[in-house]
Length: 108
Image (cartoon, rainbow, N blue to C red; front, side, top):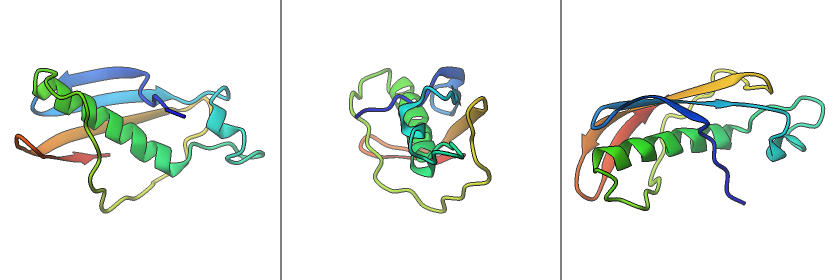
């Protein structure tokens, strides 16, 4: 199963930053069992949303020359609050270092 966890890109400055949003609805398939009486977005999918936003930023920075972007490492992950149906998850990413084979970003 493939998730698309970005609904809209709010801001995109190639080579610098991106801001994107995902509006969580009860129709999201992964909420059916996470958790049945208290549906919240799984933390790993919040991380995936940040990864997707960072991927769009890297593609835009490289003039869409890259077709496959993969997450190599994630460190210092902290979840501040739950995201429930009806709420908006806002993610942002900034390029810290950009090279031909590897790009480092800081996302939140």
